[in-house]
Amino acid sequence: MHHFDYKNNALHGEDVALSDIAEKVGTPFYCYSAATLRRHFRVFADAFKGQDTLVAYSVKSLSNLAVLKLLANEGAGADVVSAGELKRARAVGIPAKKIVFSGVGKTIDEMTLALEEGIHQFNVESEPELLQLSEVATRMNKRAQIAIRVNPDVSAGGHDKISTGRKEDKFGISWERAEEVYAQAKDLPGIDVVGVDIHIGSQITDLAPFEQAFTKVTKLVETLRAQGCPISRLDLGGGLGIPYHHNHGTNTPPPPTPSEYAALIRKITDPLDVQLIFEPGRMIVGNAGILVAKTIFVKDGDVRRFLILDAAMNDLIRPALYDAYHEVIPVKEPAATAEMAQVDLVGPVCETGDTFARQRNMPPVQKGDLVAFLSAGAYGAVQASEYNTRPLVPEVLVDGDQFAVIRERPTVEDILKREIIPDWL
Ligand code: LLP
Image (tube, rainbow, N blue to C red; front, side):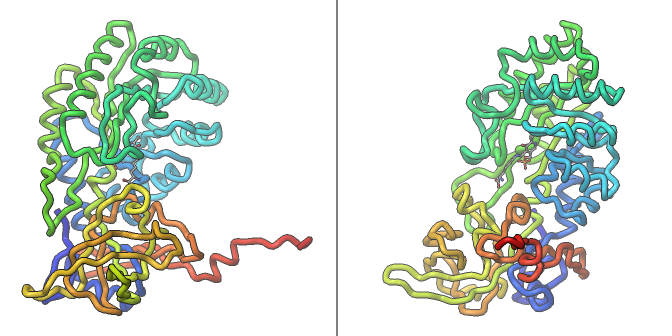
């Protein structure tokens, strides 16, 4: 569900014509819909109404302060993976008690900051991390509340590069060693064991792997409690997939809805009486954002027609990195009778990998026309770079009939200013 629709033959973000934004800020730009963000957060949170639940929005998926502020206003907590993300969450007023800290490589400085802030929970991913955290906390005369991320050896996720719950993945502590590590953690001076954590991957569109992993982890909670570990929280991670195909259907079934997901979780975890923690990213922001680009040239090659856009792999790397599919539609609504033809959608970066789609069926698009990449809210702007000295694209938030630039486009001069030529050159 999203609020990017054609009205009067022009694509709008809520009540704002995207061509008006393009005129004001130039292209390319990311545009997010406030109504969609609020709706997605509410649908997810409401699915667990009446239960002790913390929805810790996964900041990595889209970390702009305005988006975080909007979600904080809805009651969101935050799942952070760096000091930077922790500072973002605190900067918009997300209470420390609603923040969980995930990630395999937390530094001493990051642990110190999180302990100073008094965050809700560290999700610990290894024994060296556990020992280090205990040491840092003891030195600070504090205790870190922790969950250990266990790796349930379940294969899931939309792509090999975003699957995290298999034995060979770098995440978490192996299932076989979990009880032993909990026993060790219980006796460490700087540690309060409070929970169990899993996260099996991203863009999971089927409930089966969740069911498998959650059933396994529920049994572990029971075992740990029997061994004297006071487990009162269960962090089930993120990972619920979203539809990427909108107007052009495929045979892939739609991902589970939050209420189907919640029903499954209730069925499995109800007897435990724990606080449930979730770390959703993509399902909150994915379909709440688009990337708008302009067609620089239409180039007819020997065997292909190329739409050369002013957006490139540095602005939206998902197709190059994960072969991800993003639907691309013209901003000016095509006539119902428009003939579709196959084109390759490419950017100006000097690599063949700078290809968004090959042989994509599109209505006619001409030089100067705007197109929109749908479902680009999650892992879009946050994974952008300045490769080819292309400035980061601006981000815009629409809310009803108003819009605001929430990150400005830097100038090339801004980029050059950050670099230093030593005197001795
Ligand atoms: N919690 C943990 C510990 C995670 O590692 C992640 C995502 C999430 C929560 C949020 O997962 P989500 O609900 O968004 O699926 N860049 C890739 C996705 C990487 C996901 C990394 N971890 C992409 O563009 O598809």
